[in-house]
Length: 180
Image 1 (cartoon, rainbow, N blue to C red):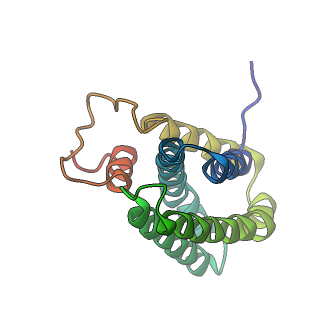
Image 2: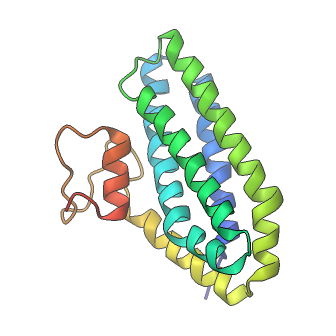
Image 3: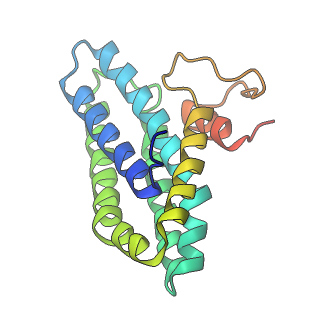
């Protein structure tokens, strides 16, 4: 039987996956491939932020004296990222704004990841037992399974997606069960 993976390892793996997708966006030619990679990044990032907001932030609030401040900062970071993702949505990848927005998004994500990996995760590992970290890791894996892995993936039939919503909103609704 495989050894359970803890929440820190799960989230760190997400961070590396996002790094790779950013690299694909910056190297990909033609523009359609860049657009597809940006859509994949949108789904990866939304799944990740929802997992953190639903499973990491409540633990952070409960475990640390400054937990509310940390969790609120995490959520504010996510909101800024999702705003940029919304601005990117539907934008042709051959437009100058596309590159500017991808660069802005990468800067936001990089700062957020650095803070988590250098500050939050070490504190979390020190404050929580391994079993609790593994339980959170399992919950985050389950959240990941709810969302499509690519823009063209079909969501589960039990999760209707409202027409007219953008990819960010559709991905968030899919992961959180909203829009039902």
